Image (cartoon, helix red, strand yellow):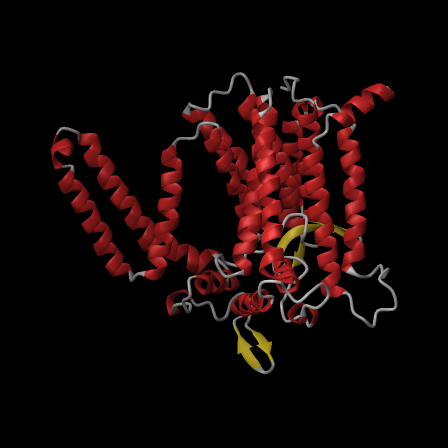
Length: 445
């Protein structure tokens, strides 16, 4: 048994473990830097969030050890069971969730709280990997593609019902995995076209947009007139795309903004694209009220991003030095140890420190892709791509929203942001991958 365990530990990917520990350690020091005060009698104050994060890290390492000692086929064999349990917990959370800042996405047991949606990312990754790796699955067929999409969208829909839109959006990263496994290019084209149409609807007057879309359809029809005369299906397809675009821009987008999105979400979207909220979408009596900042009303989401930019910009190239961040020390930046923790890096360590951090994340994601491509088992390969996609989405969106390139949607920075649910879920994702990779020569089904 001792020789077997020694052999197992020798097969673990040391580079991934080193990158994981490095990022978590940076997170611990960053959380400490924004919360520690010179008047504190000691650094070992258990009520501080950095000490709680140390405990979470210890728990994560213990769980990681258990995962490493678990048979790798266990994760494949029970993938669908875990997924079903996750959906059940998400369903309970819709009705019994604890209200935190308007979101009912948390479950509480005494003083302990956790976010089921974070954990369910792991179960969804395992279930998707299991389904796509089944011998009977033919992902080229519409039926199996729809099943794959359902595996992803069902938990996302449940999380939306919990009013946690930001976390629900993370689940769309699994479409990158399905694209890697054979989802057609048309899906990505439709996705990017939808995003472009939403932006056009917000930026352009609806009457003007109607004229533009109609003109584009007529021009395409004119250019393809010879082919369309012989192809009735082509005419129907062109008219269908035009009609769908009209319904989406003229009806669906306005309906979503007026009746689905909350006020703070609308504020964040328009703040990102540099516009004031139009009267048609203004929900002055609904959602989060503007915060009072020194007697002056300010848009809370706009204020957060402005303070974030000030903090990052003030760091310059070299930064102000560890524990010397004035904006973060004086708490000008809200949520500075969770959603906006990147500000503390930018202010204290400047552009150079931020670049090093980004380099660590990119190295980790590239390492995971390398691990994925060396697998004999398709289950492990697909799961590895799930992990890489989740990390990429969180990393890209979190940093983008701190510098004003994306709406503030409450996405944490992996391994750095404070929070037990976030740290544990990312740690479990990584350790399962490390365990599966240790048996990369085994065909796991």
